[in-house]
Image 1: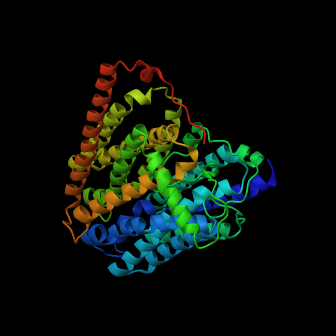
Image 2: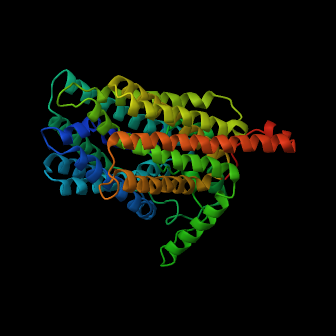
Image 3: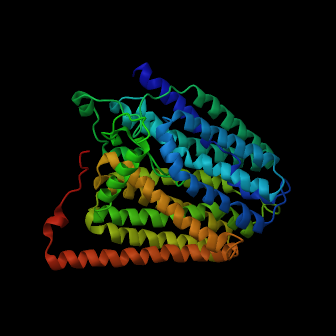
Length: 467
């Protein structure tokens, strides 16, 4: 293992661990509605939390381009600073306006996550891609799980006030910031800073094997991931026409990518389900707080987040060994699992028992992570690797756009501002509607193939096309 390979990987893993190590996060709603901030449920749910969604949507595409133009490292530093500002404001803020501002900074931190998942591919050789991808993803999941577990132990066993969990989280972000400053600066990027390559260099850029995708199970906080095999033939262009050339290339690739009906189907599920998933994750804590108020009872949110994170990672890993003809049964499988998700959300809403709610939440997250990993593989199997970032970026943008509409209508006080139980009933119905859509699509595909006698399609194997 060469020093050139090891140094940036270690630094990025340190950064990823400490930026995902957030002991306060499982107790954020309890912190805001508790004696530290004394905010009401309406203020937290309808006036503060929606600002994360709005800022994330607005910043996603500009940050995507800026990440490439600035060559990753500056954007990683911006992310670390955004996390620090977010939690510094959280600890000091006393009113709704400041809380809304910190949600905007958190939206910036989330949008800049693209830099973390793309940086490593610009500074290490292609032969190390699979290993460093597994390291970086595993470390972030480990940091999240350990942070939730430590937070719960400090609250339940040591009776540590939630304010000090915020301080620990802020210190973790500061350590991540220090690590980001020592990252080496990449000399190239995906679009704006492509160096001339010889035929030998181009031959070295082999497509990623689909098994790599299972090394990095998806989180909604994960959203756009870039790989070096997505580099295009666009040469280094710093002239005024550089941005226009990039946008034209993106549009051309967009039209070509979504001309595949299979890719389009999986992308539709990706966008629809991710919208609902993020919404449930964002507002699960207010629901738990309504069922079991933290001021009157001991809560176990940290344990739940730890177990659900590990279950989700395990589910995403296991699916890599499942042999199913997804080309035939994909839509019906999405239908069945979408029903499972809808039932989980419905039980969270209607039973109103905290243990049923916790269990349903864990099953909900594990099922989603399993399906999003399958979707990742299927999209990759029907896509040229150099367009990987584009498709996942578009899917994420559509998911955020739909989530914004849902937030404006259902959650925001400027819209209906519905009660949290009514909101979750709507989310359960939303996933049920997704199940119906893919049930119809699955039946249509089966009847169409049976009617046309498309035996070749039924027995065809799925391969990843070369870039």
